Length: 470
Image (cartoon, rainbow, N blue to C red):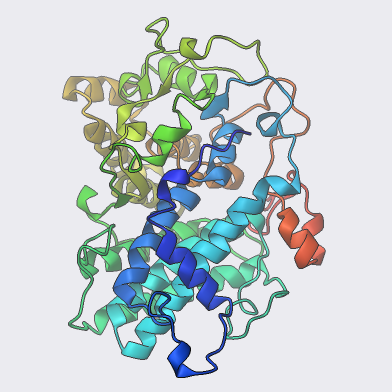
């Protein structure tokens, strides 16, 4: 797979990698006079936060692993012949950069930020660190299942930590979010400002995000062993009472555009890449007469038509296929890590489980309408679409909700998580598939080499703990 990432960010992340080096054990001071003023041993929270937020957007939300998942969920396709990751030929080494980015770049520095904020009593930075740590942990465990945490971040430099069970990781995620909410409630006077790329220091927005993420992760466990969909849905609904209430609450990263500041998906669909949109995604919109087709999909340069590529089919001219629209992959487009629209679909599904299709009906319609309004769809087209797909049927309501959620969550890892959890949207494996559709990432080669663990025998067709068959 061609890796289009990410020379552009190296300068922005230079301080981040300095922190990584320091955290992994810099040289101990022998004489104070040998302190190097150009290599600080203490960095303020306001300098740690921005590069970590950028890294989460670039390397987790829009990074290598999600590019692979989007092929597997059939939103995107490379204009390349089989075999490859796209027809499920995967190797452990394919995931090395994702593990590094999740642990060294993101989680390690979030741990530093949290520790620094705790030491200084700066509870707002501590809250943000915990929320982003929960987000990053969820990203990692949803990819790999059991992962190191308790032995990896316990204050010792343990280079061979054992793996925690995924169920315990999920408990830690909820604990981090609860503790973050408690930190925000302490109302510490010092707040981030422009160093907070996501919310510019708006702690009410961070608090709403924490509650909404709680709902997202409760719903991940609707089929987990020992959990019930009804209980998880009730927990999600309770969390959403304090969650996002408007599009202004979205967790997103804005990009200014131009060389070095592009939205990462702009590079993924860029001229040095072979990535295009998948025929499954494009044809789904066309078949439903979905007015979002022209808003989410760019017409092919060569033909002016909306055309996706089916993986495994004969290669065509790269310019004969559609790319993502400017809304999602323009130079100045934002990345949407968590949105109010997603929260509406979470609420619709949870309400369906607890109270049935009739109770979920209006919430489902609100989710569709909100996403279409975001894209600038005409009100008459919204009305026509809702006339065809806006009524939930009790027998098919879950499928309807998740299908619409997958459109609204275009390019998000949540579409893959929902497919594993619910079976929707319905997919068939690609032409020339070497296995069934993968259900997880493989553990990276770097871990197999430096930290052997029993879980590392997992294959891409194995299920993570919460991806139960019941």
